[in-house]
Image (tube, rainbow over all chains, first blue to last red; front, side, top):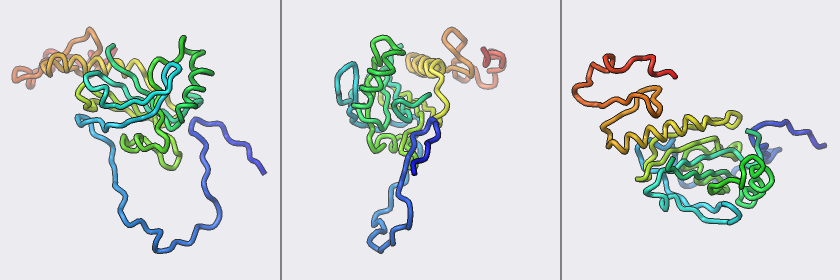
Amino acid sequence: MAEKAEVGCARPTGGPVGEEPVKTPQDTPKTIKEVRGMIKVGQKAPDFVSPGYQKGEFINIKLSDYLGKWVLLCFYPGDFTFV
Amino acid sequence: MGAEVLSMSIDSMFVHKMWNDNELSKMVDGGVPFPMLSDAGGKVGTVYGVYDENAGVEARGRFIIDPDGVVQGYEVLTPPVGRNVNETFRQLQAFQLVRETAGKEATPSGWKPGKQTLKPGPDLVGKVWEVWKTEQAFD
């Protein structure tokens, strides 16, 4: 039966339910995931390439192309959210 | 103000277009002027420390990056609380002033354009109380 979702600012997410899959030794990751902390002020901003949309065009943006300019990089939870 | 804005979320560029065309263009004449970037999978957000793996979305992280590509400041908020754009502008203007004066001037607490800056140096050690009053930290 469908359940009415609560309205909120975070994007509703789902995931697998039910019994946990039986773990076999192969499921154990062989490499330890790199632990990342918060990036530090005074250090280089990590470079990236991202597809995007601007004024009717689909574009690709590379952060390092903005060297020589001040940049405000703003992340947000998702399009069509309320805040 | 001399800064380029880039926004980023886990939405695709197609959803960005729909959001801009159907809603944001009704708030802002001509629509969003800056690039709306797509970070599907949160890879960039992870590197910047703003991607929440459990929720699958990015927090409201805002990074001020200088012309050398160095992060001068950031702020990260959980989704329900919006940013203060004026505070971002104020910080940007402060960082620009510090850069233009090559660090000869610094901006004390509560500084905004037009208010007094401090000139760090041996003469100022132990003498800030003479030239700067705590009331100046407030508007």
